[in-house]
Structure formats: C-alpha cells, structure tokens
Image (cartoon, rainbow, N blue to C red; front, top):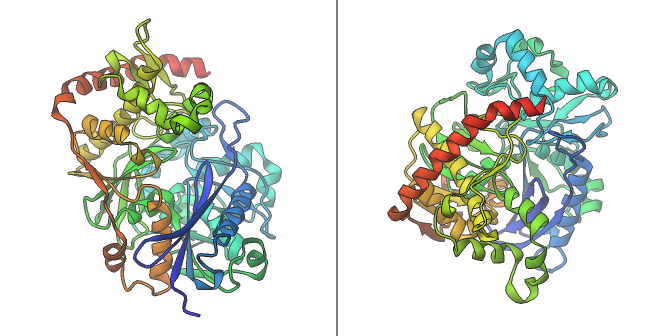
Length: 505
C-alpha cells in the first residue's frame, strides 16, 4: 500500500493535537485530547508526562474513527512539544515525578545562586541564554536538592517530545532544537559542553544523544501500536520545539522571517542564519538545519483569555448554543470598546514573566478601573496587554540587530480578527495569518516528511504547504493611543516590580 500521509503530534500545555496531512499540507483528519496542569504551590506549574502519553494515544486513536485514513498509509510521524520540561526517567523508562513546565518558577533561588557562583556571563557565553527558572537546567538541580530520591534514580532527562518519541519507539534522544533548555548546551556548535555540565553539577549521564530534528530515531513498537492504533514499524523522527515547528509550518525559513505565536503562551520567533544573542531574549536552534531562532517568550497569550473565560465567562458559556462560543462573545464585547480601552492597561504576568523582563515574581495587573468600565473594557485591555508584551520583545530584538518587517501569526489567537488587528496596531507591523490552528502540527509533519524522503528539501516542503489566509495592516489612527498606553504599560512594571518582589518573599 502506498504511504502518502504524514502525521504531526503536538504536545501543548492544555492538550495534545494530532493531525494527518497530505504532502501539500492539507489536513485529512485531526483530533485532540486535553489534560491538566497542576499548580500545587505558588510559582509551581507541573504536568504528568503520562498524561501527555494518554492524551496522545487518545488523539491518535481518534484519527482512525472517520475512516478517512488508515494507519498503514502514514509515511512518517513528527512530534513537537512545549519547551523546558525536565522529564526524569529511570533505566526502565519509568517517569519518576511530575515535570515542572515552562511557566514554573520554583527554582528562582537556584538560578540566583549559580549565576553568582559560576558567573552569569560565563553561563550565557556557552548557552546563549540566561540562567532563569523557566529553563530545564535549574529544574534538574531542584530535583537534586528537593527530591533526592528522584534524582538518585534518574537515568535520563527528556524533553516533552523526546518522551513521546520514547513511548512510541523506545529510543532515548534529545533533538537539537530543544537543547536550548540546557545551559550546558553549546549554542554556537549544537553539542553538549561537558565542562559546563560539571560546573552546574549536571551528570553527563543525564544528557541524551543530540540528534537532528528530522532524523529517524526509531519506529513504532508493537506495544505503542496496540495503544495508538498506529502501524508497527512506522518511522518516527526526533521532532522539536512547538514554537519552532509552528515557525516551520508558517513557512519561515529565511533570515529575518518571523512567526508570531498566539497559543497558550505568546511571543515571536525570528529566523536568523547567524548566531545572534541578547541576554533578555531566548535563542534556540530552528528545526531547520543551519538556522537559529531569536525568540521572545511571554506567559501572556491565549492562556490569559482561557483563565478569564473560566473564571468570568459563565454567562457567555450558558448562551453558547445560540450566540456562539464564549470566547467569540467576549471578543464582541471587547470590539465595542475603543482602542486603548479608555485608559485601562493590563500587565499579563499571570505566572511571573519570561522575556524580556525575566521576573518570576511579576504579577498580573489591571490599571485604570473605574465605574464606567465594563467587562468589554477588561477583555480588550487583556488583548492589548498581550500585544504590548509582544511589542516589548520585538523592540528588544531590534536593539539586538534583528529586523522584522512583517510577521506570520499562528496559534488559536490568530483566529481572532480583533486580537490580530490589535497586535498589528500595537507593534506597527503587518501580520499575515497562516494555517493558524494547524501550523504547529504541520511543522512536525514536515520534519517527518523530510526525514522520510517525502520532500527533497525544506524549501520544497514550504513551497508545497505554506498558505497565508489574511493580512492585517496597522491602522495608523490607533498608533497614538497605543503608544501612550504602552508607555503606561512599561511604567507600571518599572514602578511595581520592587513591591512584587517584596510581596513574594
């Protein structure tokens, strides 16, 4: 039987999404399954890797229900995952604990200590990234200091997609793109720096073999086939970071091309063909060989609206059958409010904040409340606040020498015309919308297609699959009010950060 389809699996923060694609990027069938995030203490955010696996099994099994594709027709599988996990497994592959995820900040004190003992500049020179609590490195050291029984049994530390690859194939690997979570990863050369690992007290035995993202690292085992319905022996590539796969799925391959991320988290990824760093940003390898991604990663994204809808959207949920989704109803309220939200400004620091302020103690703030404000004002201010976070990252990148003319938006928020227009107006940059809901899984599938020979090159893959649907051009008339509110946004944090840190003690 001719194998003509590619499967992409996305292990996100709130759910696993699986989609089958034709070689020209069309979705044949898709399915998803959700799982929880655990918040056991302030600053903690954990997930159970077994929940990812169960979610992946459920989503992949759901692909076969329509009968539109058969498992035997899948030519290859690519997996992407959220960043900065620290999945501790023993020699039998058993997960030893929940993993802190990208928004977890429990290891802030460890970072402060190591930045003094080893030297922040020394660490940055190797890793191209500052040592901050969101990354993998301090989480592993936190295990040593707080979960010694887990640390003692640990054989390897895996990333999110690496764990799914292991469950499907039994292969233990570290793709090059997700290497940026480790500060003993030599970002210039794409290899482990064992001297830095020693200085950080990271056992070299914890570090899996580094492989290209499109490398076939294994094949679906009989056990995994029984749980997912996949065909035994289907090739599986190493995969990569979700933001990088989304960047590839959006068609970003060349120097200066930029993806704007509108998933659970927000941010942007600027493709660069040269090593370009900034201590306030994030640098990773692209899933495409020979390229890096200069990134801004913020906590404020779709998760902000998810939280608001869960806490304050009961009325909209009750009317969803007749009025449309609760999110659409809330954005309709926001659309009725003038740009600038009549002076209301929101800091979207709902779980600390990553780039460019790197403050685990930062808090969400609504400024400008008074009796005239409505639910629509609050919603619009939240949409604008996430756009201000994006602008802050873009300005930081441009000071580092990157130049962004336009962005390609992916993720759930790209489906909102209002939100995307706000981002264009706030940043002053045109935003094209790609296959917003499937760009990330498409990028993972493209990795499988390149690895399995479905595509001769990444250029060919992008030419065959990239689609842009709409473009949002900045409306110049809104620039003044957004510039004013952006100044307030920056001043609010500058004036409150001392208090935030004091209250966190």
